[in-house]
Image (cartoon, rainbow, N blue to C red; front, side):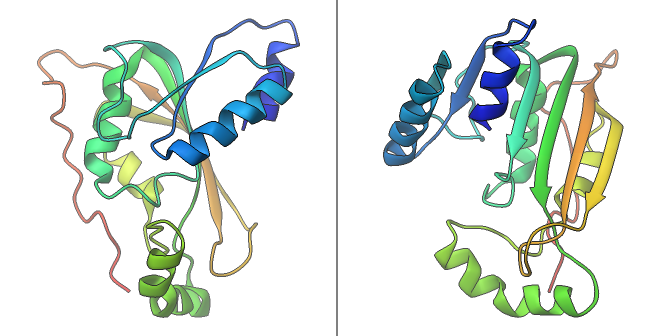
Length: 181
């Protein structure tokens, strides 16, 4: 994602870029990539279940192909909601479970894939999980037939954070978090 941020920063827009990466090796690679792009980015050690940022810190949170590997999606999305400012956007690009024969193949490959692909869940329907979060309104959602089986299709989306009177922070309830193969 850093090349896209570098392009935007070099345009008329100004913004700060922060990132988290739990793996020290991958964090170093990300820092090197940011330096090659001359992108000023703060990369912290952290995990999605406990983001190292204060409440209402960000206008935009971007997740790209990460929610498939997060063990507890409910906790992670609650963290996204926590760090987003009211009116802020959550933008994402994720792969999800397909339909038909591809879905059956994903189900067969899922246990092995999870082991060799950093915990990736091929059979998650991540966008439906996001849609269940009361604090987020769907603004845009697009299914894209890109990728190669078993990692296809993809979906990209934009959700806007809203806060309701009396809504307790961290109360998001996500049901049916995993689609059974």
